[in-house]
Amino acid sequence: MPDLTQEILANIRRAAALQLWQLGAVKVNLDQPFKLTSGNYSPIYVNCRRLISSVAFADLFAAAARTLVESENISFDVLAGGETAGIPFAAFLARSFGKPMVYVRKAAKEHGLSSLVEGALTSGARVLLVEDLITDAGSKLHFVKGINDAGGTVVDVLVLFDRQQGGREALQEKGIRLHAVTDMSTALEAADSGGVLAAEELRVVRAYLRSPREWHRERSLAFMG
Image (tube, rainbow, N blue to C red; front, side, top):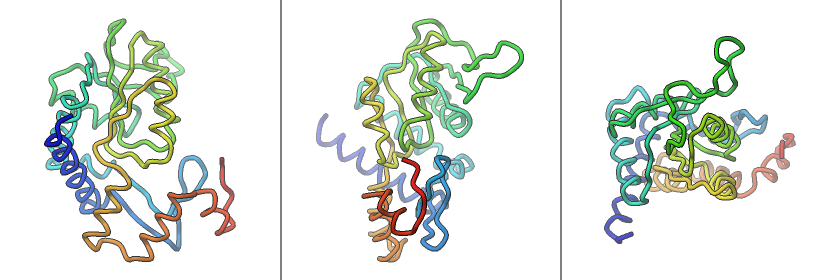
């Protein structure tokens, strides 16, 4: 990849991270940590759903995705969004790329066709799974299985935000590439340079990211490994 493209991607990551802070999609609370889906807690919470109301961010996301697709040689026939947060982001890109879209359910309906994948998915289609963020990749692997079972093939996953907590490695073990518009490191660098967070807030968040288990132990919180 040419150095110029690397610099463009770095600028996009910084711009996206700053918009996350500006639009209130990232919150930090040291006194009342946020409870996550896993049952664990975190002093930092990323809510990408707030971003779907911003036309400017939708344009930035589409431009960032196009740059990633071109620079990282991502080939696909169909875009897929995961229920529910991934659906609007996949829709943004489907419109931008002029490609068809499907979405993947968390669980099959108990009536009708009991489908996990909704929309027209041709057997053998190359599917780019689009999601809002990734933590440990558990839900992403579920969505990938649903797409594969429906006849599609997933080798690439594109997310807006990578929390950098093992998701990339979990996908790599399955032969799947992760592409992220921005990530936790970039968001914290932007917060530091922009004076968004106090020094103590940055210290605690970084300590949590280094070892969530130890962070939980220090606060007498149960950690769901």
